[in-house]
Image 1: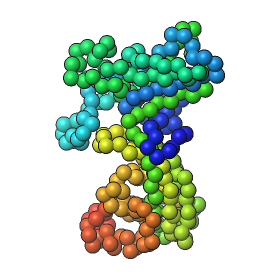
Image 2 (image 1 turned 90 degrees about the horizontal axis):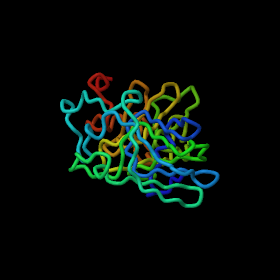
Image 3 (image 1 turned 180 degrees about the horizontal axis):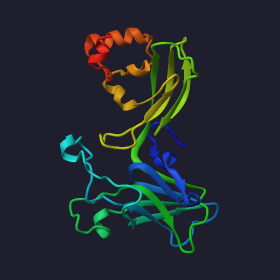
Image 4 (image 1 turned 30 degrees about the horizontal axis):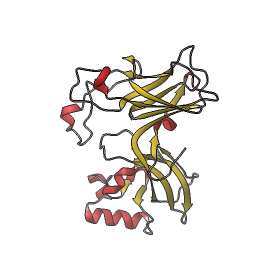
Length: 267
């Protein structure tokens, strides 16, 4: 996995791999801009990429704003079962044993009626390769979105020292290092995604496992600490020397951070 800062995010690393490596499936729609298939020998003839289409492109979220809940709250954005495979209009370049496929404008051949939507990506929950005679064992299938990698540090603060061993993992991200600080804190070095699209499904989820389990979005830390009072934990951007109690009191005094409700304020 290439997690160099500024490099393109490969969403295939967080997909379920099917069909002996020739198909990817995600829990949520991904905006795929480039597909790279690598083989042990030269790519097969007639290679093409198909994406699963059920709601997109006729129904799609904006890339520059978050719609109000009443506008799209009940939208069906797609699933794995209701829809059909769509052969993508792509340009393919072969580089040794790799085939690099980039998407041509959507409305040139695939959806000529969408005059105002000439995008060079495809939004889908499933992606697969086809070829003359079948696709036999690609060594890897990569699906790059418009997100890029960045790095950050976060501090995880516990209200009480966990009895269970603490563990951390990331979805759409990577935990590079976890440095224990005393009995009730960890400083984590993370690789996370960044994307100006507020509706992207590439956001990084950090899961914290100990006496209880909780997952937070690292992007939410830009608005302040994230508190999970029921689990007795707080996550803070950067390397923070304060403890849980100090951070909690500071957050309450400023009405700051996510996670405090009226019940919590009464503690």
